Length: 387
Image (cartoon, rainbow, N blue to C red; front, side):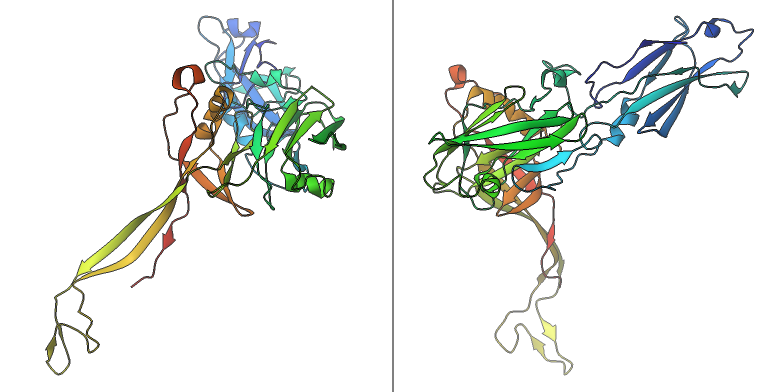
């Protein structure tokens, strides 16, 4: 038995993970009656799935697609476990699978034999494809920041409980340096270590997080800072801006690579409340135990006819960015498509959903400079007083 096709390196769990196998025994129904290919899927040396298929009628190949099985073993989770620059240092299982091994057997005459073929261990990732990015898109980003944003100028504020996330793909275990240089050409270096391959390092590059590692480095006199990496050549340029006249919101979201990123929405915002009420109707008068009819209480309050009870409400928010480059407008499609979005208010992160369902990528040459306005709905419904 041989593998004729296996998923490519850097394949995504959100696509088809197809294994094709062949054995000449499938062509001999006399010696091997009712022949089937049997496959077992092991993740981190634990059996998680068994499947059987008949040979294809034309090619006698066995075709297995384990995408729907394997994707269940990747966890999407914003688990901020660290302080300072590294917010999360995640091993496989949190954004990529642990080792996946497929073992093949033969079944004929109702009996399954011993293992015939064992595939090598493979790792699959939680990125996704689109029309211009294939299933192995992550192959372009080893030892790099996993972002498609415009890294030349990222606006950020000096808020006291800042979180500003950017994910980094540390493909090979080891150490690398992060250099932060301010507008006075002062540089500090921080070393990050990963203890295994295929780790996601979630960085927090807010001024607050930087000052936790290098106390006082980012001050009110700092206007900008640059972040550079000793591996891969990634760089980020941050511009510190004032909070302005509007409420500032940071939105954190799961991006196309399976890591979390952040965006500042610092222009006009509007909050709205959607309510749900139940009512019942009564007569306009009341009759006392003494038989007296009244249309109002002793305190000159009219009796209710329509009575409201079981009131509920949920909040929505419309938020806006500053002017965006073409690159950032394309990048923020990840936010609109993201299944996990958090809006930061103070130091707390609130789960939210983007209710906009259509996203048109603006271009400066066609549409002039544009900002982005999004509608956010919070998942929690609150009750008013029950009557």
